[in-house]
Length: 286
Image (cartoon, rainbow, N blue to C red; front, top):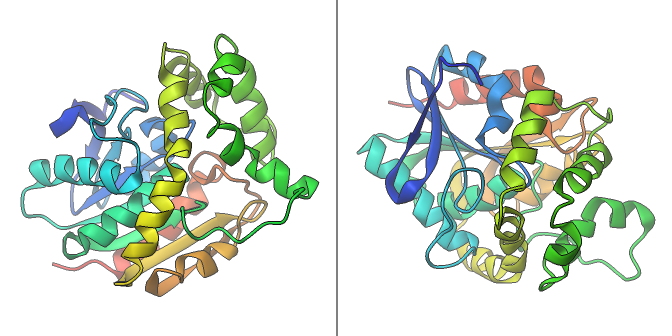
């Protein structure tokens, strides 16, 4: 991150990296990332929009949420922080991975404030397909963290003091080109998740997954009627993101980002920025 972008704290202590001018765009990263995940798209976004890249509660430099890690609660905390800052302005909402988990219930609860929603390679709770066990090797490699991270105590026992080893293996597994993350972003993640309690706060999102899924299925009773962009890495969820998002939204477009794994903003920032800007411009309203 360069000095031209400003880091501030919003209501509830939510940390935001802010830059640019124009209509607001809210960017929510996933796990194990921080707001810096979007660093390489800040510049193109800033030419037309004011962006707010947020650390979700409990991740990065944002404090833990007071009332739990279920995404209905987390999204409400983050929405209140943004609404307090933007006042009556409407905005575009973008979420990757766990940020996508948060972005859907955020949009479901505050649809009137949101111009568009973009979800990037996210297995939103409540909409995963049913799997038979034992899982295939390919499925297990892709989804192992959903089971492991949700276990009580064991993840902390096995990862404390070995955060660099875990995250190195994890990012290499889920990117097309091992070691393909920009070094400064990767080191930021290591620094953030090596702090005492940081890994536990990330695991709590997975421990709340079942609760979040039940909440989301309730939200689907009123499908989203705003434009939604669904993008997946071609070597990850790919164009399957469209089918996933059609479970809860009626105006869905999107597809796959080529030569890309799970970490779209870091692996293919130029392609992601182009798709986002085209979508945002097509759905800009006063």
